Length: 269
Image (cartoon, rainbow, N blue to C red; front, top):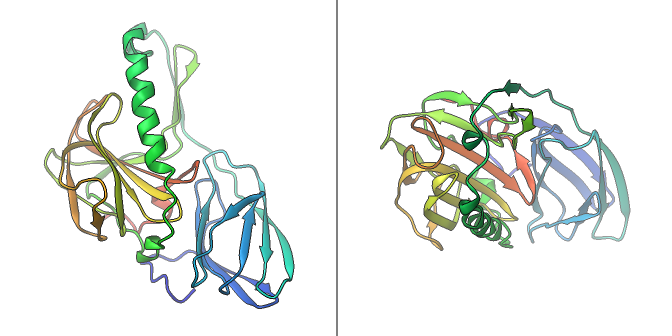
C-alpha cells in the first residue's frame, strides 16, 4: 500500500482481484484496524456491511474487542468479478478484575443522573456516526500524549458481582496541563467541556467513520468543525469526569467497533 507511510510495521496482506491487487496493513485481531488500497471502483463488504472505498481506492475497517474468530470479506472488482475471503481473527485474553464490598454509590450512578448520562451518550454517538468520505486516516497515527501507560484496552472490572463496561481505550498518565495532540489528521466532531463520565471530551473524525476520542481533558483548544493536523496541540491533559488522577484516555472507533489504539500507534515514547 503505497500511500500509507505509517511509522510502525504491521502485517501486509495482498489479495488478488481480477482487476488488480488488494493490499492492506493491519492486524487481523480483536481490536485491530486494517488500512488498505484497492483498485479504484472496487466494492467491499465485511460480514454484509459495506466498507466505503475512496475514489483513489483507500479503505479502512476494524474489529471490536469481542469480534468472533471468523469474518467474511466480499470483494467486487471494477471488472465485475466477485471474490469472498474468510478472515481468521486472532482472539485475545483480557485482564479481568473482581472487586466486592464496594458502596452502591461507587458502582451505579444516582438515579437523578441517568437522564443526563443518556443525553450525553446520544451526543457522543451522533458525533461518531457522521459519514465523512475523506481518507484522513492515511496520515498515520501518533500517541496524543506522552507518559506512563496506566490503563490498557479490553480490561474489565466486575464490581459487587456486576460486570462493568470494558475499558475500550488506553490510558496515559501525565500531569494536568500537559499537551494533547491530534493523533492523526481529521475534523473535530465533538468538543464537550463536562460529560459525566469522561469530563472534558474531544472527538476527532479521521474519515470513513474512524474516530479518536480524547477524554478527561483539562482544556479543549479546538472547536467543532475545525480541521486539525496530526501532531497539532488540541487540548491539555486533565482529571475531569469520573477519574482518580490526571491522565489521557484515548479511544478509537470504526463504526461500532472499538479499536485498540496501541495496535496502530508506534511504541509509546
